[in-house]
Each structure stands twice: as structure tokens, then as C-alpha cells.
Amino acid sequence: MFQKIIDAIYRCNTFLITSHERLDGDALGSELALFHTLHQIGKKAVIFNQDQTPENYRFLPGADQIYNKIKNVEEFDAVFILDCSELERVGREAARIGTIKNMINIDHHISNRGFCKITLIDPQASSSGELIYRLFKKMNIAISKDTATNLYSAILTDTGGFRYGNTRKDTLLAAGNLVEYGADPQYIAENIYENTSPSKLSLLTKALKTLTFDCNGKVASLVVLLRDIESAGALPEYTEGLVDIPRTVKGVKISVLYSELSDDSFKISLRSKGNVNVERVARILGGGGHINASACKLRGDIKTVKQQVMETIKSFDF
Image 1 (cartoon, rainbow, N blue to C red):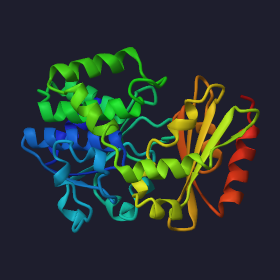
Image 2: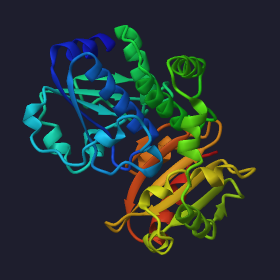
Image 3: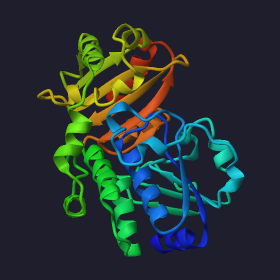
């Protein structure tokens, strides 16, 4: 599918770039890398995201040029939908974005069934950023320092700092090449992982008080309620990464984070170790993702939601 995307890039002139709600490093790094490279070859590109850029990613080159409102989609020849397994994941503007003639989807989620005519989907890839890196190499385009920084950040974050099972030989080779092109691993890691605000630590303290273990210690979970976020003086984006904490406990195979949303629902983030597949859990609950990292959204109070999630997890032999 590389050639179809390359043909579309050279055929079209104006591009919209977007990704999913509740932005992460892969979504933002991928968007910004594509943004810089399209401009580099003389194309017009605009990034739209429904949500604001989280604080720890605002250092990424070009992050200050992202828009959170979109006026006329008619002005775009094509749209890149990155790191999304379905169109609805871009949020409230999904229907309007879906009217753009040329829709291009680059994604690595195993739950992606293909919602665009032009796609690059590889569940074996570590990240959407790695796929965009491959695209640029196919195009024989020079990768600038800014693009390298964004792509390295995308790969770094979606591999959990190169700790997850999606870290393969090609992933490390790509990261190494991006360092050669100008990405600074220390600078990037410090901005993403060592730039925590006191209010996020306060939120973490509250979340740890909710830590519970199930299934003889094989499942650990945390809960973050809206009132916890408010009382900590935190932002909803500060919940990113909290799901990885219970995963570090010896004997835990599945980690769950229940994050309360403003529409009487919860986002459920799932992480696992080894070959324990949490994507099938998320899929049953209406979500999806990867074998070791998936998510879904459920309506109801925390007691009802936790019961539904745990019943689903217990239905599998792990």
C-alpha cells in the first residue's frame, strides 16, 4: 500500500492531518512528522486534533501549529487519519472529515478492519510512527532533525521506552537511524518522562489508594474519578501512563485503569505482560488496540463498570 499513499501525496496538494481523542506520543509524533515532511516537499498541510496537546508533548517541533478547530473541510484534497482503527476515534468532527474525497489511514492496531480505500495497516509495527518512517524511506525523502525528533518520540512512547513486546529489530534500527538524523534520546526522554508537574504526583497519590488485586494477584487496577482530578488540581491528560504502574508489580499479568469521563462513562485502559492478550477483552467491550495494550469505553458507575470488565477478563484463561 506504500505506492498508493505515495501517489496520493504527489497527486494532491492540500492535506488535513488528524488522529484520535486523548492524544498520546505516537499520535502527535506521527502527525507532526508527516506535517513537516509534506511542507518539505511543497505541499500544504494542517493538523487538527479535537483535544489540546498534553503538556509533556508541547516541546515537539511544530506542536504550536496544531489546530483544535476546523472550518472548511472542502479546502482539503486529502486527509491522513493516523493511529486510528476507525473514523469515529477522531471525535466530534468525524462525520465532516469523512466527506473529504481522499482518505488515507496509517495505523498499527490489530482491531483495524480498514475504513479507508487507501491504507497502511501493520499490527506488527511498534507504532504508527514506525510506519511513517518506512513510508519516508520508500519515498527516499531526507528526514530532517525536526521530523526525526517527532518520529523517535512516537516510537519511544508506543513501545513503553522500548520495553514492550512490540519492540522488534526493525523498531530499534529505525530508532537508531532517527538518532543519526538528529533525534536526541536524552532530550526527548527528559521532556516526556521527567517533566512531571506536582499536581500529577498528587493525582498519582490518590490513584494508588484505589489499588486493588484480583484473580489471585494476576490482575491489578487503579481508579481515577473526576473529583480526584479536580482536588489534585490536575488535568485529565495526567492519567496517561498510570495504567503502567500496576503492571510493574510482580505476579501481575493484567493492569487496568478506570478513568472517569465527563459523559457518565469510563475509559478502560488495559495493559498486559507476555502473551496475555487484552485486545480480545477490549474488543468484547466495544474497544480494541494491541495484544498488550488496548482500551474501551463503558457507561455506568464504577461498580458496574468494574464488574463488567472483571467478568470479561475472568472469561479467558490466562
